[in-house]
Image (cartoon, rainbow, N blue to C red; front, side, top):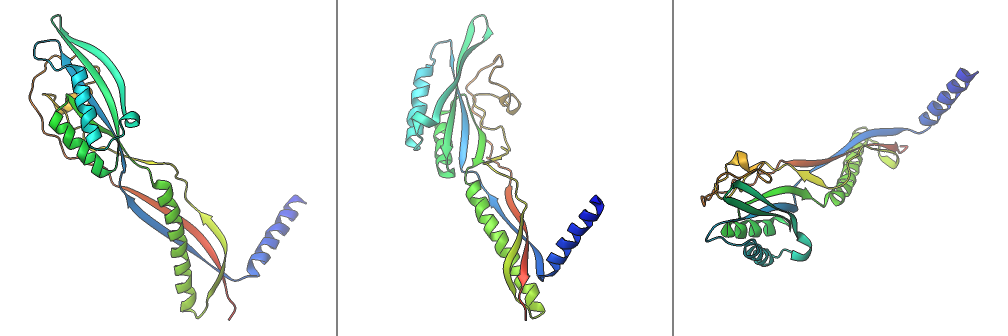
Length: 239
C-alpha cells in the first residue's frame, strides 16, 4: 500500500510539472577580490647595554608614526606581549610585541614606509582580510540570476519563444563571512634576522644582535575569487 501511495505521489508531481512548459538554465558570476584590512605585528627590543634606546622611546616613536599614517591608536594599536630573553649571563633583551590594524592599501603603504624609517627589530603583515565579502556576494547573486535570465531568453528566442516568470530557483552558495588572504612572505625581518629565523623568533633565545638592516621583501597575497551559481527555471510563454 505504501509503495502504491509513493507511486501516486510521484505521478501527481510528474503530471503537475508537465502542466507548465519551462526552461531550466544555470547562472554563474565571479569576481576577484583584494584585501582591505591588514593586521601587522611589530616587535621592539631593548638591549641591556650602553647607548640603548628604551622601549618607551621606541613605542612613542611608533605611536607618532602611526598617527601620521592615520591609524586610530586607541582601537588599532595594541600591546600583545611583553617579555625578556637572555643571550648569556651578562646580556638581557627586553621585548615588546604589538599588533597594528590598518585599513586600506593606501594606509598600509604609509605605515610600512614609516616603520621602515624607524627600523624596529621586526615587523610583518600577519593577516590580510577582505571585509566587503557579504556585499560582494549579494552583488554576485544578482549577477548570476541575470546571467541565467539572459541565457533563458537567448535559448527560448532561438525557437521563437519567450520566457515568463521565474518558477524555481536553486542557490548553490554556501560561503559566508570575511575572506582571509595567504601572506606570501615572512619578510620585514630587521636587524640581522635571517628569513628563516624571522618566522619563529618571538620566544626564541636571541644569541646574536647587530645593527644590520635587511630590505623588506615584496608583499604578496594569494589571488582570491568569489563565485556564485544558481539553477533557475523560467516558464515558457504560449505562442
